[in-house]
Image (cartoon, rainbow, N blue to C red; front, side, top):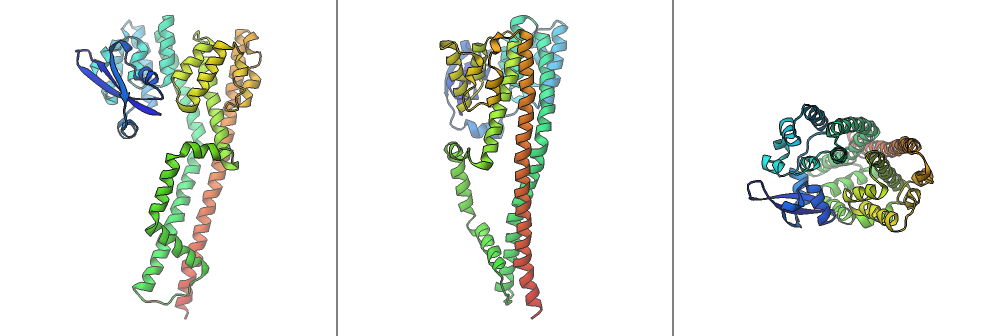
Length: 386
């Protein structure tokens, strides 16, 4: 993922710019929400990733939902899109100016500029074409609300696992630093004779590493981050990491099925769906959609055959065989069933990951307590009894 600086002409003829993420310049232009007719240049932004992480602001999902409902009401009252958005959304909160809003040409440009959820942008484009913009705003609000509710359910097991992981790391670092530091203080400052156990040596070694060799751990983390893609390619098939890989496949498939059902109900054809998904994806996922689009366009393959790639869950290919021969109601039922099945698979993988992570964290906590007790308190007790 790269970042690009998009320079364009403002409403008053002045030059404005914004940083946008994307795999290619065309993708950056698409995500910027700026009409191509007023763009002056698109150049690489080498500090864009850091700037985005520190400074980029988005409307929270609950505020987006409220804004979409308000927009639907204002559109039904006869107001124009531009006026409704200016009245309904606190655009200054996401560092957007009124001039930028006034430069937008179509309804979806406004939502792209305001960094709305992709679902809202998609339905806005479909509603603009069909002349049912108000209904599209309302539908987008309902879908985002439903997805947020589902996302919170997904997050419950992982949230508990994260708490356990933090507790485990804290115990694994905190006990050795405290115990090892106290023992060093007793020996050097108070000149006490301490009978050390093997666990005392472990405690002192960990304390020394954490306080004097910590930069090694930082360097290892930095190397892993820099080479995360090739490293992930190697370890993704390992037993524990395979759960993450399978979960990623299921999440990818779930995102596609949900978007596909939404897009086709708005009149999109299969090639149009793949093109839409490709333009809004990046990295490996973008390449997968690009390959799928080429196969649909040049080889006239059926939809089910596209998903025989091992990067997709097998259940999608199995259920989409003969999909084109079904009636519209039958297709919708197949997609609904797939959505439910993939959701359940996603929850199961999340539960497994959370359970293993929690067990590992508890093991670290117990081990840290044992090392602390046998390496710190036992020597102290023996010292006091001499």
